Length: 241
Image 1 (cartoon, rainbow, N blue to C red):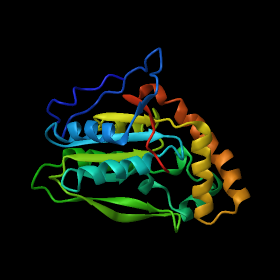
Image 2 (cartoon, one colour):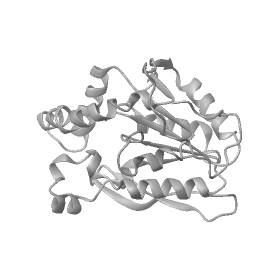
Image 3 (cartoon, one colour):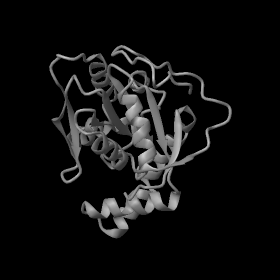
Image 4 (cartoon, rainbow, N blue to C red):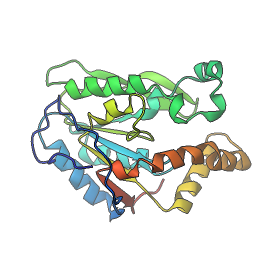
């Protein structure tokens, strides 16, 4: 997908159109954290509010990279807003019969996420903060108003699995992102990270592997179909988790 010039003005109402994916998917670039911070800094300096999206399969390193960028740029220039804050609650998933597929595309409030990004994109200096939900893995639930997005912070980094999905309200969210980077680490590394993460939050080693190769893998296959719509596909060589 062609993206606007990141060095040009990025007014709050800027919308990036969703277009037909290219015939040849982009090759993965091997970039360091320093190189990605430099690219993010250019987006932050573009003027106005800019939203950068990070997408990829579970375990790709999206959250790790998002926070690495924000930490490097500092709170005056960047803040992280995760898509995972829009997980449906466990109670709602039970009512819908989807609890055993938590993390699938239909277990998120996509309209709520799109509306949040629209509010964030419309912020201007002097406006009140916008409060975004966060997802707490230790309780496996979203928590409302977990992060404040100040109006004078130029770059919002948002990360999640379905930023490039073409169904539901996901394209509304994508329309507010100046660029979307697709993270594509080696598959064995991604799965190892994912299993370790599930085990760290209470699953047995076998349960962790079963979930990673079951529900998570089905989601990863869907996410892979959106790869060609990314502005940048990268194998982030500095990632640790």
